[in-house]
Image 1 (cartoon, rainbow, N blue to C red):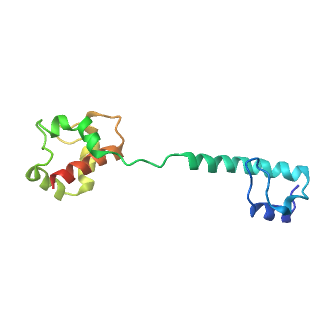
Image 2 (image 1 turned 135 degrees about the vertical axis):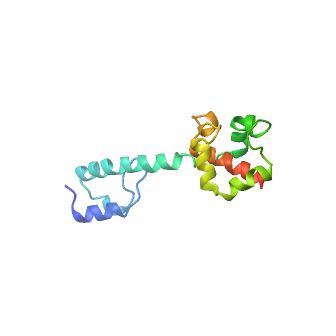
Image 3 (image 1 turned 180 degrees about the vertical axis):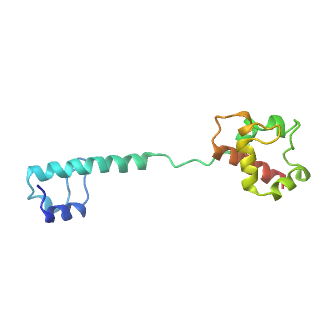
Length: 136
């Protein structure tokens, strides 16, 4: 069983890759205490390692999403055309939340997510941001 001094010493120390404590205070611990520390430190180490290896979220490329999913209608089709300020200004004036909701859920003749259900809401928003930037 861990005694209170061992618990507080363990909480304040660093662990090497084996999960063994690296501070001097724990050299006089019992095998049971070392086993307990290992059981607590390995899951924590795994969580920290996994979180550090996870790539940061990449910003969606609005232009590429637009080209792949939206250009068929918004760059030569019957929908409001990218870059046409007159066609977009009243929509932009309604606010970005409204534009996002319309693009995600569909509006008029446009299906939800432009017909590509595999797009995330973030990707759809990136495409909307691109269209607005090009149309203001």
